[in-house]
Image (cartoon, rainbow over the protein chains, first blue to last red):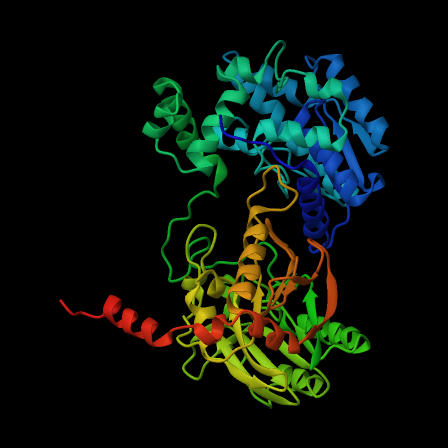
Amino acid sequence: MSNLTINPQLAIKILTGFIKTELNRVGFSKTLMGLSGGLDSAVSLYLSARALGPENVLAMRMPYKTSPQETLDDAQLMIDALGVQSLTVDITPMAEPLINRFEDMTKLRAGNIMARMRMIVLYDQSVAFNGLVMGTSNKTEMLLGYSTVYGDSAAALQPIGDLYKTQVRQLARGLGIPEKILEKAPSADLWDGQTDEGELGFTYEAVDQLLYLLVDQRYSPEACVAEGFERAFVDRVLRLVRMNHFKRIMPPIAKLSQRTIGYDFLYLRDWGT
Amino acid sequence: MKMKIGLAQFNTKLGDVHANLETHLAIIKEARAQEADLLIFPELSLTGYALQDLAVTAALRPHQKDPVFSELLQASQEMDLIIGFVHEDRRHRFYIAAAYLSQGEILHIHNKVYLPTYGMFDEGRFFAWGDSVQAFETRFGRVGMLICEDFWHASLPYLLWLDGADILYFTSASPGRGLNADPRLSSSEWVEHTNRAYAGLFTNFVAHANRVGYEDGLNFWGGSTIFDPDGKLVVRAPDFATDLSVAEIDLDQLNRTRARLPILRDERTNLVQRELERILGNNE
């Protein structure tokens, strides 16, 4: 077993500094994010409240009609505990007409519509609130592509994008996030009874161990099998990482000129700030 | 002789030399109030680190009439300064460089020799490689300057030591990485161990200024240090905080340590030369 233990206080120091500096240098002091009641958005919320002060953070609850009441209550618990600003926008009247428009609608398509509807609400409120949208994606889901492109993956900053899910849990403990949130089975809550681990077919514990070897430690697939991971599991994870790479990069631009965005027109986002 | 060294840690404005110059002048003023004899700014302190295509527009030609250098040279009348900048040579090659300014003169410029171009680093794409390393005389004795990756290669500090440098001035803009269970990042632990080792192995002073702040997702961890010829920590600036640490060193410590531990006296440079020639020569 690889050691994925992190020092939560050091992570909090670096990440709160990141949130504050990277917002301030582009002229913002406020942030907002969707708060699902799950762990990842809870961690982004707690980090943001520490970095900017709770009055500068807007937690958005955006339920769909099938969202369990419990997730709304859990989100409210954290809103009250931190004293952040909050707003609830029911996405049902916006999402439902599109979902009902097509008879062959699938769970996957409906889930994507909900995720993108939430993105629209967030980006609209970002103008009203004069804040930037804080990302809530972790390294495990980014690598596996377990997200909706232009939906929950849309954000201005990704504070926890280099922490595996099992590390996000450690960070959550360090932030004092309620035990009830920590103990819940991770879920996208796009339909009743959905859980990440049920849908993915493996546990975060197991896949984080494998991803750590493959990505962080640059192990070959064969070396991972030699470490005791099943061949089929290694192959499946590798395939997910590769097939979903498009979600992690900007769309390729067809190069024609002498200087092309992304290839030889290279600047950080922080250019001149 | 005693001297006071200041280590400046701050966040830069990426590619904006004039804004960063103002920050330099403000920190110089602060260091003057603390009676620093020398103030060390980190790598690329006038420009920021991950410049990419900004390297060209942020570059300077260091001379008396350059408007940025003339202000810094004026400030160097009262206090020696080590400045980080992009150095454009006459043939439009761009180097990551450090300049030592003293009493209105540019005493020395070091162009970074080792440009990390692997993993997260891409310096070799945007900058030219420096091709020399040399110690130089200052009013506080003979010293040498190196920039970040330069001192991840043992050969450069070693050459400066043989060239007479009793104080090694290191500058860096080191992105923090390697979060684990420890209270410090593994990259910062590594650099601190290395600097301590150089101080102890060479019976030298080693002063290191590392920047703080963020550029996009990169964090810079600070933690600037001075080690004495016994390898003892003189001062350590805080991690992840804007800071000016000023500490006094006693140059007579070189004498005391080397009387006890004559590593420099016993260094067999002829053997080094002979063996290097054998190892690098084509004698087969």
